[in-house]
Image 1 (cartoon, rainbow, N blue to C red):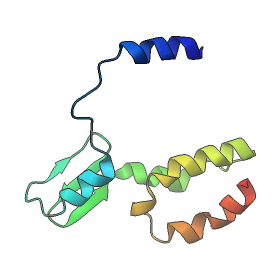
Image 2 (spheres, rainbow, N blue to C red):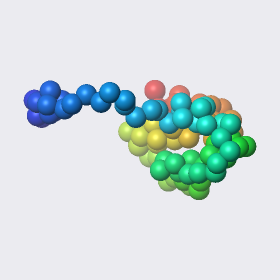
Image 3 (cartoon, rainbow, N blue to C red):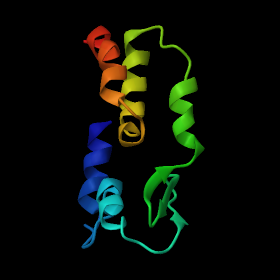
Image 4 (cartoon, rainbow, N blue to C red):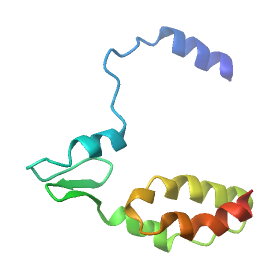
Length: 99
């Protein structure tokens, strides 16, 4: 399986201007005067960056029953940490359980 990926990677033309990371876009757009929504569900205004209702899914996600489920949830929810008040304190017990 790795051989196929290596072959594809060798054939891929490297991008001169790679896609910027979302976090960098947010920092650069804080002083924007145009209201817009990125495909990641981030709403950018002159008041800052906020999430649309996707961040609500973090709160209603089903309880993880296994360690792999918990790790998967933590990886996924970690993306939204910037938009969740006291995120580190809330997930600390889950990180302890997952390790």
